[in-house]
Image (cartoon, rainbow over all chains, first blue to last red; front, side, top):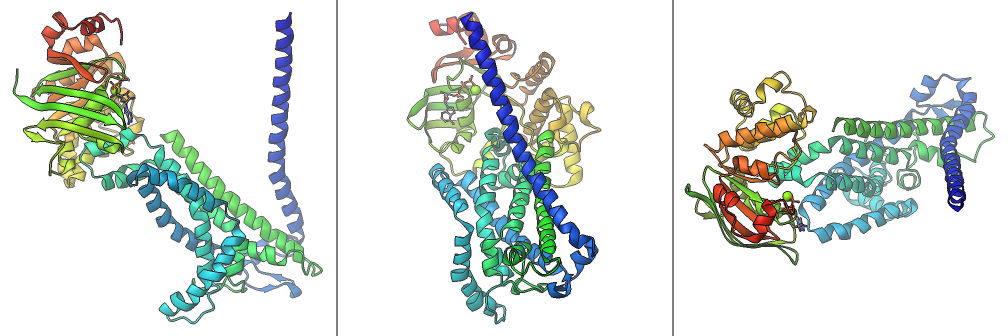
Amino acid sequence: MRLRNFNIGRHLRDRLHYSWMLLVLAITMIVPVALLSGLIYKSSFLLSEQSFFQILFSNQWKPLSGKFGFYPFIISSLWVSVVSLLIAVPICLLTAIHLTQYAKRWVLNLMHPVIDLLAGIPSVIFGMWGILVIVPVISNYIGPLFGKNISGYSILAGAIVLSIMIIPFILNILIELFRHIPTELKETSLSLGATQWQTVKFVLVKKIFPGIVSAFGLGMSRAFGETIAVLMVVGNVVHVPKGIFQPGYPLPALIANNYGEMLSIPLYDSALMLAALILFVIVLFFNFLSRLIIVKSNIHN
Amino acid sequence: MNKPKINIQDLNLYYGKQHILKNINTIIPERQITVIMGPSGCGKTTLMKSLNRLTDLTPDCSVSGKIMIDGQNILNTTEDITKIRKKMGLLAQRPYPLPMSIYNNVAYGLRISGRKKRRFLDKRVEHYLRQVNLWNEVKDRLKEPAGTLSIGQQQRLCLARGLAVDPEIILADEPTSALDPISSQTIEEKFKELKNQFTIVMVTHILRQAKRIADYVIFMYLGEIIEQGPAKDFFENPQEEITKDYLKGLFY
Ligand SMILES: Nc1ncnc2c1ncn2[C@@H]1O[C@H](COP(=O)(O)OP(=O)(O)OP(=O)(O)O)[C@@H](O)[C@H]1O
Ligand SMILES: [Mg+2]
């Protein structure tokens, strides 16, 4: 009899836990959906008056006369995140390979917390560091090297700061990927007469290639959404940038700089909401793509 | 007994402070099948790995003694380590196909050593796949990822891949333990054929398999060689008590 009661209690608790989990799950599902529908609703005001493609591809940003062209912001965002990725890719790959394949154990054990620490630094600090170090370096050294006389607030500054921020994030994923390759695979390649470097190049990287691609995809989506640090060093000039030494004005910066001000201008808030929607969708897209690649490759292996 | 191919003298191996291989002294004859037996954890895999210096990969591993292969001490040599490793084809407990096509798995070792001519590779790939009785099963799907083959096919592919670098020695660590009976039999029969050309060292837990194919047996226990000798003597007339118990199946 006691046993039975005990069992009922246990089942009840089990049920309770189960419904709790369902609730929490539901909340985590509802939030993004609510966010998305809110953004769609708000931006519908602008979209009902102007064509979406007009907005996407026009570079006229004149809110006072009702012109909301996002083209400069989208291009700026692309510039900053692509350049930051170009900086981060080789650094991350080589570091991960070195740490997992060549370095002594203790080096990796030491680096792991350091990388985590780096990943946890608030982005505003990276922004400040960008203003204090990167911007002057670009203005005084890198710019003149290419014969440019510039302030330093530029796509390049934003990209460098961004890359420093996404490197620890990507690096962590890559290290995990490399560490989970079975030793036997490495042994196989070596036993066939390959050198360590050949093994890395032809076997290990290949084995986890989909994972590498999606790690960078996730990094890209982070870079695309990062706001404060970029905003502080990128210059925030509304124009379509034509090179890394020019200033830019990425989408997140547009929203952060302007939301809450000048909302008396008709459709202005709707335009910012549309900008947020576009950002949201792009970031979601990169995330989704990266995860898709992982899932696909898991099925294959 | 054939002429010795591998001569191991006073081999001691430590992982950190753990003494794994203790005073190993043995001779592995050329072109015969030498079977290493012993209970789990006694150091069989470690001994195999030290033969082609894969133990180098473990950071805190230290080795002393000599492993003479064709008169050259591979533990202390100026020769390129990749050359030494190429002398030995490795077959692991489970097949580990390289993440590439069936064709490229076999061609990998050749490409690595600079043989890149397509016609040459085509011929070699076919030759080795035939040698392991795999050609007919895969000839229409050479471009498919090797991971799509069945486990038994994969293991034969791994054998072909190992043979393709033209080794002198085959190191096989429980090569049939993940395989079905038919695939196991194929591998066993291959080994019996291959011993005309290669020196084969094989670890197995399966007593009957050892009896079927061994020419020479090494029995290990807790990191030491307890008994070794020609298969007939070993199985019919074991000297040590531990060996007798093991052969009776009293422990694994
Ligand atoms: N990389 C390693 N680092 C530390 N210890 C290890 C390592 N590899 C193996 N060992 C230890 O060495 C001993 C021998 O292992 P080994 O794999 O050679 O045994 P085995 O005879 O092949 O066993 P099995 O029949 O189960 O395969 C074990 O105690 C194992 O824990
Ligand atoms: Mg073993």
